[in-house]
Image (cartoon, rainbow, N blue to C red; front, side, top):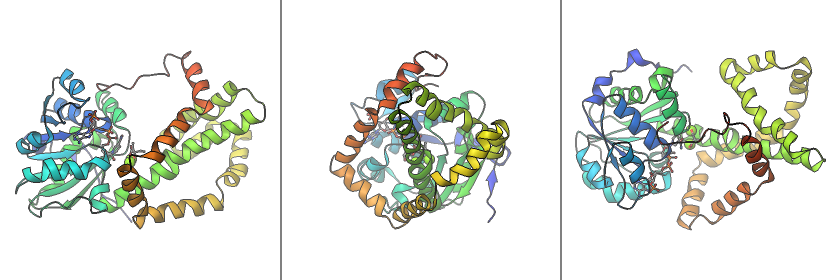
Amino acid sequence: MSVEVYYDDDADLGLIQAKKVAVIGYGSQGHAHALSLRDSGVDVVIGLPEGSKSRPKAEEQGLRVLTPAEAAAEADVIMILAPDTAQRHIYAESIAPNLGAGKALFFGHGFNIRYGLIKPPADVDVAMVAPKGPGHLVRRQYVDGKGVPCLVAVEQDASGGALALALSYAKGIGGTRAGAIKTTFTEETETDLFGEQAVLCGGAAALVQTGFEVLTEAGYAPEVAYFECLHELKLIVDLMYEGGIARMRYSVSDTAEYGDLSRGPRVIDGRVKEEMRKILGEIQNGEFAREWVAEDEAGRPNFSKWQAEGAAHPIEETGAKLRGMMSWVDRPITETA
Ligand SMILES: NC(=O)C1=CN([C@@H]2O[C@H](COP(=O)(O)OP(=O)(O)OC[C@H]3O[C@@H](n4cnc5c(N)ncnc54)[C@H](OP(=O)(O)O)[C@@H]3O)[C@@H](O)[C@H]2O)C=CC1
Ligand SMILES: CC[C@](O)(C(C)=O)C(=O)O
Ligand SMILES: [Mg+2]
Ligand SMILES: [Mg+2]
């Protein structure tokens, strides 16, 4: 199945420059979109509740901050970049009363549309510009003249120009420098959730922690285990990022490559693949979404417990000590890039 990929030359920045954009939320993605759109010549206003701790951060960057309702009322394009679990409440209270024909509602991830938590009226454009990377790197890459690839999708095209507007927005945050792939809200939501659960966040973190545990429980030094299982992973993944798995295999020793080819499939075996399929099934049938919404409504008891357990894992203490000796590694995340 071939996909359509759009680059800078396929997108007209003038379309988004002609609109007023409200970015609701000023966290990981919100600050990146707002600052990069502003630097791309777009009129941006931020929507945050009174008392939000993000307000001073946005104001320090010279951005105008209103309440979400005021920002939505002023804007032609409303991009919701608040947490997925908060979006339906923000939409009901602040955005829906300020939507009208000719406006566009944008998302950075399709969760609320895919699972029917937000149902916009038929007379507005509904589109998505979803960067395939963490917000702080979206901003850092934009500033460095690079870009993080995006997925773009149109759920409702009331104006007839929703895709062109989404591509224009993607250009404004650097996405079309790397490539914007046209997809659907369903494909973005399901693949994004699968990727972060099974591979990028859940799978990778569990792999690293388990490798560290196996080595330290066998009596090896935590520092050696940290360098082996976490620090070097970035260097190995950098080679994959630059030239695929083949380039990583070209660069490592034959001994490593033989170990990779012969032992890798024993670690990530048929049982792991079957579990990945189950996880995908829970995403597709809505079970994960229902569980996550209920967990959030209950005050996130499991989330908080697991978060604390992760922070207390011995790999964190070892890593903090070692990273403290490498000033170039411990690069703080900022809201300005
Ligand atoms: N994190 C990422 O890199 C990626 C995220 N996405 C998607 O982008 C969207 C935003 O995620 P992310 O950037 O992680 O979110 P964050 O958790 O980083 O952002 C939270 C921001 O939203 C604000 N906020 C919280 N509640 C409200 C409210 N009721 N009204 C207005 N603002 C509110 C917070 O303010 P305060 O400081 O007061 O709490 C903060 O500024 C999600 O849809 C996510 O799936 C997509 C790709 C990658
Ligand atoms: C991988 C996690 C992510 O999907 C992302 C940075 O792309 C997210 O939701 O934060
Ligand atoms: Mg993602
Ligand atoms: Mg995600």
